[in-house]
Length: 212
Image 1 (cartoon, rainbow, N blue to C red):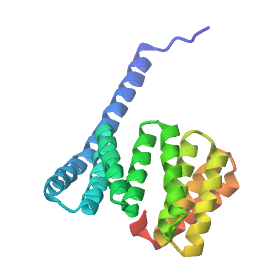
Image 2 (spheres, rainbow, N blue to C red; image 1 turned 45 degrees about the vertical axis):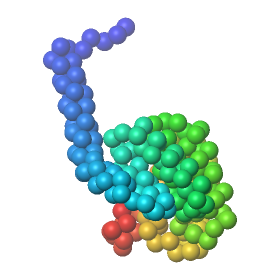
Image 3 (cartoon, helix red, strand yellow; image 1 turned 90 degrees about the vertical axis):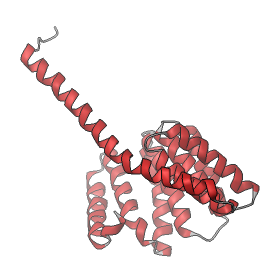
């Protein structure tokens, strides 16, 4: 038997959902506004830039700004940046383009393609000597698995990232990796481990407030 919901309660429930929707929409709009202004500025710089490596970097930042409110445009820009970076053998630019491509695809729910591109970046970074880039892509792979609710697989990559971060003292990623590990443990209902890493992330947030 389905319980009847009083009309007044139903009205409150619908209203609450509607206001919640409006609130979220407002937050997204507020966040998108400065990103659009940034994108406009970057587009103007891109129109006059002649050096290809600089163009790749500008497209990377433009895609980052654009994917907040227009992921399709961000994908097109990122693919062009990746193609250009590879054509001029600009490895750092290729790594950046792969990163923003994978990130944008994850945001729109294309996890298989996001994972594929992150693996490409991981292969690239394993040949280089840039611990921050290596740790960052390991975190990104873990996050794709986390979004697919494969929490143990996520932890596998988070712990690899944590190892790189600790060995190379990558300070600006210490807070994030502790938070991500705590999140995965929490989703696995391992409360003690989750609390330990959340506490660590809180401590790091106080030590490095600019990295949050």
